[in-house]
Picture 1 (cartoon, helix red, strand yellow):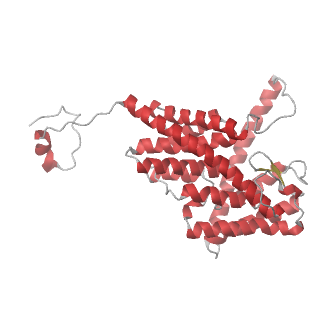
Picture 2: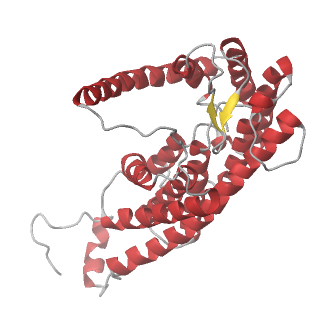
Picture 3: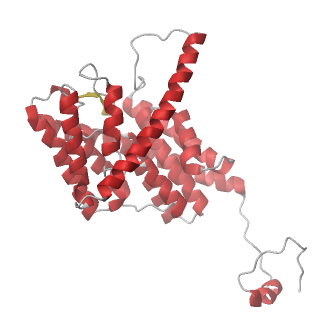
Length: 350
């Protein structure tokens, strides 16, 4: 009978089996860590290529739903609801989209509710990075309906949820560990973000902070390669122009400007805390409504449509990937509208 050094003895599952386990010539199977990292990295690159195509499909679906909803035409061309002539009927369109998304969540999967990133974090922390495969189909479809009918959402959350769901599905099909499945989930999520926005460095930091919860070669290398692949997909599928182009060159920042930037950053941090607490407060309020959660999207989108009708002139969108913007049409500053609308709709399905 073999004896382990004091302090190094493992905790046995059953003390009665210790003698038999020690006498059995068991040799643990060892796999080269470098080969394993290479294997996961190759999976991440392939996954990123697929997510890039899904991101392009998502934007095309948003364009299609926007054209059908506001202009009654079958087209994949980019368009803006700012040019629609529906009058007050424009208030009803987001509610109709909310009803469709609520039905999809009720009959398809309740997991499509939410913004995308918090749900991915939840699955990593409590469900070993396992996400239902149907999310990879329902999330982009529900997002296209919600955004295309005028909902104040962007493509970031849906494509992160979709890419994460696809990575998790691959991880569930293949024989890999929970940690490796988490890496694939993060790789798919960040690849989607990079494809939409063209920001590989920001995506890597997002993965480290919100999805991986670690900084190690086994996770960073596959995610970084997925981000590079997503960036290539962005240039190939969306072009090389900046997502948020500036008409003027920004001059070199002075010391006074740097001080102002620091103050703006601190103020933004305080405002983000306030908005986050408002989100939770309003979400708790929705939970107390005598109304099934299936109807919450319609209610939230209708409130949003009414808000922008009162505070803004006809809607506008940035043509790049249909992120919401009001351009020069605001009756009040957009910085006032965002803190009001975000708590109303950020937790809704789609």
